[in-house]
Length: 172
Ligand code: SF4
Image (cartoon, rainbow, N blue to C red; front, side, top):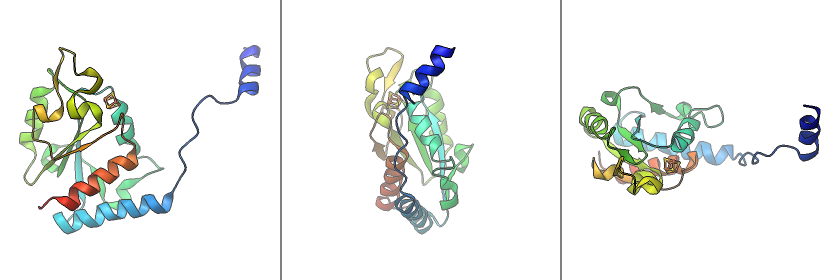
């Protein structure tokens, strides 16, 4: 134990440094998402997150949008518990055979107008899991996809940029 403590004093933390905080840029980006969703939808943006079989890396970044660092609910970006209340389905992972029906039913339960955003490299085409017999492919193999946000995983800011581009480019 003593050796371990000594080692930690000598080597310091092994984790990566936290990303530089650019509060003003983040606030501006989030406010633009809020403004665009109010203009297009007349209200804030409601998102239902669907994990169709991811490794949870993408979920960690999506969850970060709600933490105290990003705290995006203050800008009108809301995660909802039911697809019946959602504007956007944010779908992660390769779609697994077991999650295929759940994704189809979630899509069917989401009222129009609705948009589907495939998140991460796995959401595009199955990514590193594409060859697995447990996967049926990317999100577009099961439901129509309006936008893909690349990355493994995409950062919270990349997610926000993707949502903004989606809202600015679709017609409600
Ligand atoms: S894109 Fe990367 S982080 Fe996201 S589910 Fe696939 S392997 Fe995991």
